[in-house]
Structure formats: structure tokens, C-alpha cells
Length: 403
Image (tube, rainbow, N blue to C red):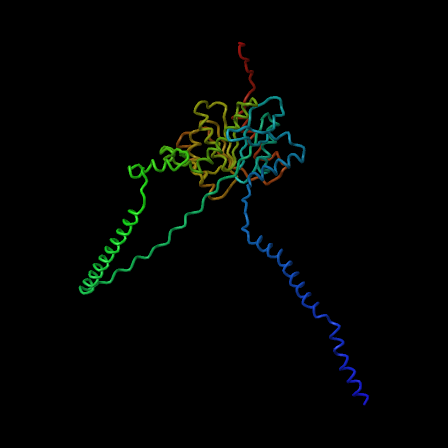
């Protein structure tokens, strides 16, 4: 009996529990949840749209980065006095200048670095430019711009397969096709005639302006305009016929002009006994500018090459240019690769054929990078060769109007 009584009490208490819950609150919470989900999905959708935007890739200018890092290095060690600005025809550029330290100037040395190097390169450029001022030489080392890259080869066009041969037709099939063609042409002629008749009927129904009736269509157009529009003059055929300058020629001219501007800067600083030390591919631009300058004057110039290489792109005939230079030349070789051996042998043969007796080859061991080692074997041999073949002397310059 007690068990039955407790079950009845439990059953009667169930509606009380259900009544405690407010049915209107549950949908409201659900709506709130949906709203929060929608609000949280909006930034994610915006983020996904931003991710879908195409990425912009910028090709870094390695040459300009090397210039900036070199200048930052010199400024860090309080050597910013060596930085000099050269006003070039194509815009100013930077160089590193050191005056002589003896009081007896011998001349000016222009140092050209190789590709992927800079004006303070530790292997060759930096030791030479810091060593020669102690022996009377003013040194100027310049920066080159980004070297041009050889374009990728063109992709060949895909081969088009030959068209299949038409099957042979019999006489019956030929007669049937001719009949079909005649019927089709007759139907097209009838349809065109209907179109012409309908167009004529429509044209007759349209009122023709007075100007058009007088066979003056331009006058009708002019009357419909408030003012006569300004017509741009057409490009002359002479401008269109001028071919575009190749990128290779523009790059070569810029490199040669930079060397010319550097030599002019040494002249402004009072140096007229000039020596160019060209490393690697820069020998091509040194040979070209000397070939141009020596047409007027061949006195006061000398050339030193260090592992000189002929440029393949843009194409430069280095050996032919060097053979035209009747000045003292020292060709230093530290690269012992088979390619360099063949190039050196070919260059020496070109000089012998042109009877250039002022050309000299010298094999030296390669120098390891060391910023503190200026008195290395390459610097010493260059200093000795300059003292024998290119040493200058200081002369007095007369002022204008005095004799």
C-alpha cells in the first residue's frame, strides 16, 4: 500500500517539473545561437575572400641590395667619407673613393667588380682599392646595376595533325549532292528576295531628312552635333616604322656609359693617368670604353684584367676589342677551370696575330676572402706592374693667360 501511494505522488509531481520550464525561452535561445553563428561566420567569410586574392610577387633587385648593405657597413665603421656620388648621364650612382697617401700621386685607378659582386668585394676589389693608395694611386670603385638575364627559349608550337582525306564519291552521290545544292540555292535566293522586298517597304515608309535627300550625309551629322569634336592627329608612318631598341643594346650602353662617367669623375678629381682594373665580365665594358677613348688619344691609359670572361648575353667580342688596344695590358688568371684555360689560350692567340706586344699574361693562385688582408699576392703583383708600365708623374698645369 505504501508503494502504491508513493507511485501516485511521483506521477502527480511530473507536470510540476515540466511547468518549471518556459517553452518560449527555448526558441529564443535557439535564435540567439543562430545569430551568434552567423555573426561569427562573417569574419571567416571575409578572411576567406582575402585569402582568395592573388598574391603579388616582387622580384628583388640584388644589385641595389648589395649597394645598400655595403654603404651601411661603411657607415657603421665610420668610413662614410669614402662614399662618393658620381653624376652620370643616366642618373647619379655611388662609388667608393680613396685618395693617395704618399704626396706623390701616380694616377687614378678605376676598379670594376664582377657580376654578383659589389664595390667592396673582399676577394679582389677591397684589397686592391685599400692597398694601392699607400703607393701613390687614387682608387675609385663603382657599383654596377642589375645584370640582364638571358630570356628563356621559346616554347615550340604543337604539331597540327594532317587533315583526313575525303572519301571518294560515286556518280550517283555526286548527282544527288548537286541537286541538293541547286534546291538550297533556290531557297536562299527566294528568301533574300523576300528580305529585300520587306526592307524596301520599310525604307519607303521612313521619312528621309532633307540633307540626306540632297546626298549630304556629313551635313546631317554636323547639324545633329552641338560642336565639332576634336580629332587627335594620327601617328605618322615614320614613327610607326621605327624599330624598338633591343633590351640587350640598352643594357650594354648603360654599362659602358657608367664606366665613361667614372673616368670623367677621375678627370674632375685631377687624375689623367688612368688605369682600369676589370674583374670577370666587367672586362667587356672596360674594353669597349677604352676602344672608344683611344681613337683620339692613346697616352695615359693602362688595363688590368682579373679572370676576364667574354659576355655571352649580351654578346660581346672581348678578344677582338682587346686586340685593338695599343696600351699596356696585364691579364691575371686565377681560375684553373678547363673553360678558362681555353679562353686564355684563344685570347693569347688573338693578341699574337694582331702583334700586340704590350699584352702580358700572369698566372696567380686564387685569394680567399679576408677583409683584413690587403697585402695579398694579387695586390703586390699589380702594384709592381703599375710601377714598371703605368707609373705617372705630377705636372704643373698652366693657368689660362699665363706663359
